[in-house]
Length: 285
Image (cartoon, rainbow, N blue to C red; front, side, top):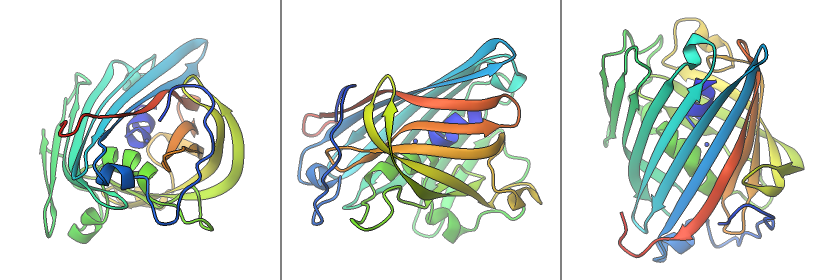
């Protein structure tokens, strides 16, 4: 569950009814921001699952400051529960980079784990020819095979990949789920491929309205243990993964509900608790 929240977590308006987006072909969700109107995104997710009769809960809080040239995203992910892997899981995440016409381009990423075991800190910087990475304590290995420099540069850090996917333009006659989402966390490189299963009605604490049900296929490309990459699921996920993406009036497609079957605690449901875009004063960081 912690990896599910971190991976998909690690993905304009207050709660209530949202109108379906009416995207303009000549515009992208980042057009207004690039034109000089900085925006702040507040995005909160709650997760629930059950072990025997006791609930396991999780929460992920994200804030993104989107300026005409640069962006910064901060995240906090925490879970509590029975299983050892869920007790006091606590991670801080931060990423920053550049706002382009149709995507967010990462530059730097930091994750700090506070699980009381390794408390690993990972730092990444995107360069012209490779992505430099430092892990403290160091990873035992970088997988078999390890991600190559071109593969790493073609992907984004978990925060940028998840939040940035909302701003990638969807073609009018294309897949509203978008994709693929390419995620590199400093070691593991994973591609998420989406299949549109149609518009559905979704009701959560932070969103009520229609959203596209997107079925997710996971491709473990590199950075995993030998043989593990042959499985098409992320660690801890044993069955189908579905993500509901809501088309918002500003052209963004935000995940408002995620559901997965896990091999340890059964079905896990993540639902948006708060989803809000608001203007930032010019020059805010």
